[in-house]
Image (cartoon, rainbow, N blue to C red; front, side, top):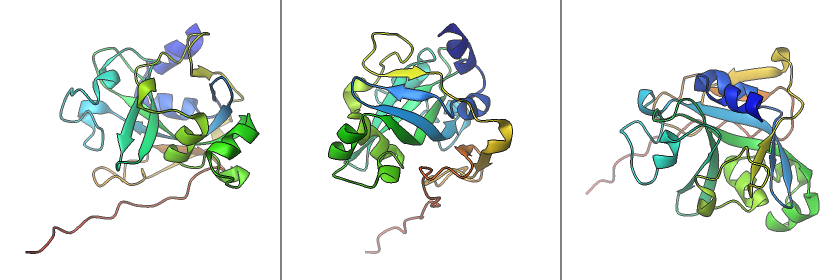
Length: 200
C-alpha cells in the first residue's frame, strides 16, 4: 500500500482523479470509485476546513489515507479520503461508485434501488457501505481496517473528465469534480441553489 499512500500525499487536485478506479472495501460490500471531488482545506472556501480546525473537521488535518466522514442535512453521511501533508487539511469526497461485490447486501441497504443507483451519489454510497460517523478517522490502507481503499483498474487519462463541483455555493466553478467518462453510476450534476433569506 506504500505506493497508494505516497500518491495520497500529493496536491488534492492531482490525488482526486487518481482515485478513480480504486475500490472501497468493507466486510460485505466492494465499490469501484467512479466519481470524486477535491477540496483544498484552508485554501478553499468550499471546504469544511476553510475556517480552520474544528471538532467536526479535525480528521482532515490528520495524516493522508484516513476516512473523513461527516453528517449533513440531518440525514446523510459522506465519505472523504484525507490527502496531503499531516497538519494541512485537504480531502477528496467520494461522490459515486459501482458496487462490484456484495450487490445483494447493497440492494437491501438501499431499499431495492436499481443497481446503477446503489452508490450513485455520496450519501447513497455511504448507505450501501453502511458507513456512518463512527468511521471518521479510520485508516483506509490497513489490511485489518473495517473499510479499506485498494488499488483498482485505473482509467486512462482520456477517460477522465472534470467539471464544476456539485452543490457548493463557493468556488463551485473550480473544475475539481472528476469522473469516468460514460460510466452510468456517475451522479447527475446539480449546481447549488442559493437560498434567499426569510422575510419578516
